[in-house]
Image (cartoon, rainbow, N blue to C red):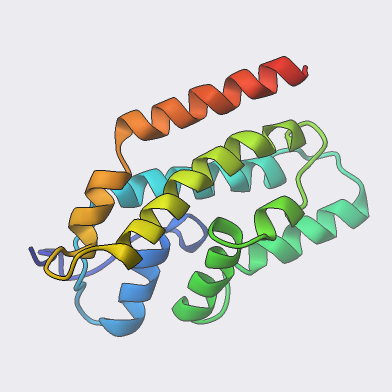
Length: 161
């Protein structure tokens, strides 16, 4: 199924990696339809951004580290932003992100959420020829999986408190 919108809207730090990559390939008209799994990934980016940016009174050094990290999701080409986000979502950068002390304990929740996307990404790579990426992602990134993963991580955080 093709995208029907003739343009994309969104805030770069919160957009899904796949939509950013599509903007590189199809700058004038979307080739990838915006789907629910893109919104779930956007939720991950909003939550991660909030753990870094919503606390005002933080040490200057931490504030600088936060700004450097967030800038990687805001500036550069769409492809560069997508690569930087892949390092966080699929690589090891999530554990290195500078989070404010108040929110650092939520890192396990974000890590659990990122596992849903990582598992989906692996499923796309292993998918049978003939199945579209979107079909695989719809199967792997579901409301119930997100909800279950957050509940499990939340319980883990609660046990640490």
